[in-house]
Length: 189
Length: 186
Image 1 (cartoon, rainbow over the protein chains, first blue to last red):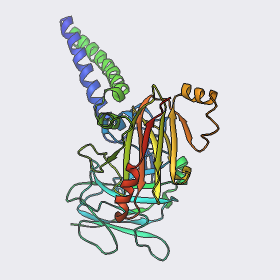
Image 2 (tube, one colour; image 1 turned 90 degrees about the vertical axis):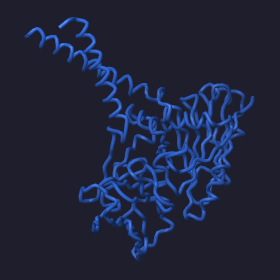
Image 3 (spheres, rainbow over the protein chains, first blue to last red; image 1 turned 180 degrees about the horizontal axis):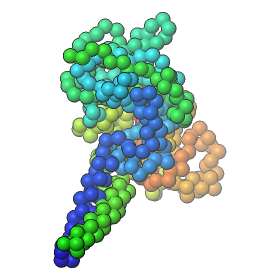
């Protein structure tokens, strides 16, 4: 093989693998620093200064404004408690314990971070609670009594739980899975 | 044949090493290269000292994965010449203020617990400006203000106002948009 061909091939392989792998690593969710609590995932370093280069690249690329550590804590869930992906075709119940926070919000997004319809989220102030203080929230495409959030028309969806002014935000790793709300799948159509 | 395979293997190995270097360079350069960052999208549209309310939808310049119950407003700063003085009125429920660097890093964040008379006052300054302010003795009178020595010259100040009920959203938006960002003229 002539030397020039070798050099060209080296550069082609380098450019291709470098650009594609960088694109893959900086789209979606940060590959490093994830903290899983039950089926919820958070990236505690995103809200502070010691964020890793991958998470910083993802933040910049998506145009997101992450929640600061001093403001609160943001959890995402893309799977239910049984480890199955969250599908808009199914109905879900979210509820149980909530970590301590002054206020929380639960929001439904599609996988690109968009909301569907005027009612995409609930706040801790507006949910109806059981006498024990627990709130159960129904997620489905069909209207349901009580606390209900509509799901997108099709595909997968993502849940975001934001804890505002939470004493846990300084040490998210201390949150027990039992202190987080459960995501239980009901029937699917 | 063996020489061909050998040179192919060398080209492949060298290509992968080059690819790794390209990968690292792209990831590290992303904060300066990306044209879609929050700073790039908002700072270009903002005059100095102007506060702009953000819409929650991901298209038309909004923020992806934004909380629909939270009104957000931003102002851009450049503290190369003078410090920035921010005063953000807080809503009745929950409100917070954060300083984001141009590279997407959250530099500083506080909640409305730090508010005095319902207003969070923050001065974003460089180390040198901070030292000068101390030297000229302006440190005592301004004890009600938070001082933040920013490691970045440019960035965004973001205020969040939570509306506990959807009916409170217009008021939360009003509060968020009432943030004032002024370059401190010396």
